[in-house]
Image 1: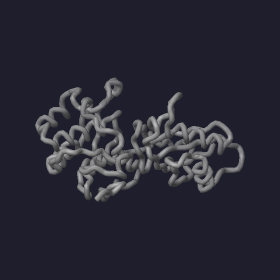
Image 2 (image 1 turned 45 degrees about the horizontal axis):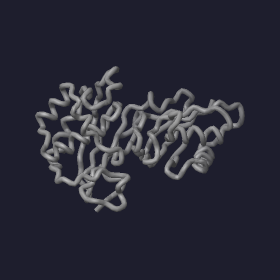
Image 3 (image 1 turned 180 degrees about the vertical axis):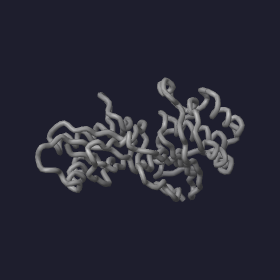
Length: 261
């Protein structure tokens, strides 16, 4: 068996998320199709995590495993041949050899997401931002974001199906920054629940609007409520930014993927 670690970027607008589905176009499905052609046989591809429909990735990580008795494939050839077959909105940034047991999801120790909120109408950035017309109190939103750090129960911020298992998440980092007409939110955690980041962003925006107080936000973090579901932010502004493995350093400067002045 030959195993590879893939670093992938994709524009998620046209896809029903990462995970392969029988009757929908997905990122994993496109990768499996391309890899099946390159390796002329059965392959295994697994991602570090699932991204929802319409969500983008700056650095998704996946493992690719191939049963082959022939000459090993050099990583640079794998990258070129896969990219030649993939649609233009999926691009493999890097391919490297890995040990056969490497698993993109199980071996990951943290994931970081970036969300871009735009404070003005934009002709070019719509697929990569959530345009919020109201004036937002960024200082208050930043204060709220710091309340996320630590080990907490995010039962109020996930889908019903996720509540059948543990909803405890260790959040390592949460911060806001302003760049031009963008409000940037980054969150890093051990793992994420389905729609968790988008629901957090939706609540942060309501805090910025003055519709939710910090004490009420604290209550949402400690008691179960369905309120965040109605506030779910759109997928367009969300990016899987980094996936960390053992000995990897966390991301540093918080900066936009698509700057808007």
